[in-house]
Image 1 (tube, rainbow, N blue to C red):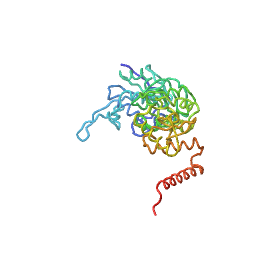
Image 2 (image 1 turned 90 degrees about the horizontal axis):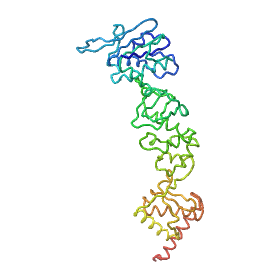
Image 3 (image 1 turned 30 degrees about the vertical axis):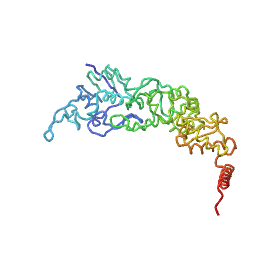
Length: 388
């Protein structure tokens, strides 16, 4: 049987174990703060067949349990030196020995203590004996980060390696449905539940979406943006970041034609750099027909457009359907989907910008449209004289 020792400086008051809701931490910034975690760990370890004892301030406490009948049902009450405590073995009933080990190890981090499979001397030593606690100790790198971060930014450490765990101050606090491309360790304050898991994974992900684009590292940006769907980051809303680094924007702008970069990154580039995604697409037969019909309608306005002058792309940015660049008119697929008449109007507007030089919402643009309306009315009147 393996024994693992958790040693902390400072004596522990037995009342911390006796009463629920009592927490006394010497660290100003502890990982845990509820005071119930130690009780959860003791109950879990006893329930899984481990022996638990605490030596503190020259006193020794052995933990066990005794059955007690309450309203005709038996409950295993946890005892400390045969003194019944105010909780049963069912406390933390969803915990396993891994969670119990994480709790005791985290307490040592909070208190500046030590953990070993050899006896330790300190003011407070918790001794746990059993096979599973040893397995947890020897695989503790899966629970606690031991690597050095590649980079640190705004309260976030980015460590090498892929994982399904999110870390908070070096401790695994949430398991994701997909793996992450890097390993993240959040140092900013997060709200934890009593079992040291984060209350809201959405809050953690939001912080990643805001902080990661700020990192001034092109290699990290390239890795995060050119990523497959098997990674969580492929679904990140990068546009949540209000102040991305120039390095992140440079990479994203150069990857506008990369289909693996998600739409949120494209939106961020469009918003911050005012660039357009000119990734042309192949038209379907129906789309070609709509384009031909729209161009034929334009001939009635003395506007002649050929296929070399019009390019169709998938996206041009948020709420943008068409634009002129290098004397070519670019329209989105969505613009064609709106129908022949809508496409004709859009092409006419871009032709006015390109060939006549009239900007949007200008008096010259307005006057041209009024003049064209008047011209069409006169032509219609000449063809069909008003009856007397």
